[in-house]
Amino acid sequence: MHYFSFHDNALHAEQVSLVEIAEQQGTPTFVYSANTIREHYKRLDDALAPIDHEVAYAVKANSNVAVLSLLNEMGASFDIVSGGELYRVVKAGGDPAKCTFAGVGKTREEIEYALELGIHAFNVESEAELNFINKVAGEMGKTAPVSIRVNPNVDAKTHKYISTGKSENKFGIDFDVIADVFERASKMEHVQLKGLQMHIGSQLTTVQPFRDAVTKVAPLAADLKEKYGIEFFSIGGGIGIIYDPALESGSPDWWDANHPEDMPLTTEKYASELIPILKPLGLKILLEPGRYIVGNAGVMITRCLYEKRGKAKTFKIVDAGMNDLIRPALYQGYHEIVPLTQGGPRSTVKTDVVGPVCETGDFFCQDRELPDFEEGELLALMSAGAYGAVMGSTYNSRPLPTEVLVDGDQATVIRKRQTMDDILAQEIF
Ligand SMILES: Cc1ncc(COP(=O)(O)O)c(C=O)c1O
Ligand SMILES: N[C@@H](CCCC[NH3+])C(=O)O
Image (cartoon, rainbow, N blue to C red):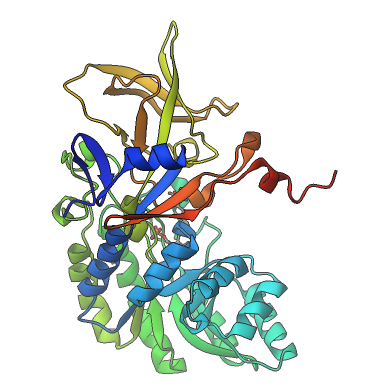
């Protein structure tokens, strides 16, 4: 089955035409394919089957409660990074005891909330935070389950804004001193050591940085198990997806979840390289995938408003902006742009696709050779399921877009389009 593919000349999500969704819901709108999410989850879960493991979905990638609920039904655990994400998981029917709580700046309120609910573990990112969690847990008469995040100083070879495992990144505790931190933590009265965690970065397209990091940290994990009886080793998320078919594979069906061989980093490759290093540890292995699960399970649909042929460039102006999908502006992220209807052959044009926001950085592509679509035409920005809607803002007083979940032939609105009154609700006149 093709999850995003053309039928009768219209791009569909599963069995639902994206043109119909656009006509009914307006644009911009995010559309997700439930079966793609399920399949990605299952593929990763199956690949790790030879070892004791848990797939803890990184909620930040797409935290719509309907998406979380779907993954909860699949049996996922959750990697959260705020009290707000924990709140969402609970609303989705998720069990706090299956949540690990990462992040360098947890507040007292968040720590108390997580202790109250009984999360699986805090992933502690500094000694100051460790001391504080110990203090707060003591005040509450509780013991805080913790794992400590190691920064292995390994180059993830990804965009510098999404690299997290080098010493100059703010995340985790330096590899050289982490053993001492565990020793001090083991003597704390209100902390129980549960695990070791790392996450070297996002959108990794080869297995080598994962292998380097796991190889470097595995002996430490073995040592910590021996000394303190830790139960798990979380190797983080970061598995990359294909954004640009021309660069990565040349396959026109790259967004189809049934083409695992086209992935730059397959789950099979990931598992076959890492399992031999991880299995001998005898620890539960946690994975924290976000983008891999939802990235290619979503698109953002938008309508072309105007075309402007300037002296230097052709601009196609669409009704979505950087406030709706910020990845191109923030990381020079690539999203394939596909007209929703396929007529006969058409000419191509080198164009910038830009939004209405009052920023020069408000573009979805620059100087890209694209089918010469017209004013009024509908388009999909592919691979927008991860770090899309969640990073949206109301900049320029632009209401947040609708989100729709397609499951087979059913399309369900899972977030209504925001209204101006929603935006103004907290303002005091
Ligand atoms: C601690 C942690 N775990 C997991 C993830 C998920 O990353 P990805 O979406 O690349 O799988 C992130 C984001 O990079 C993260 O910071
Ligand atoms: N938001 C980033 C990924 C950040 C991962 C979170 N640590 C992106 O879209 O590529």
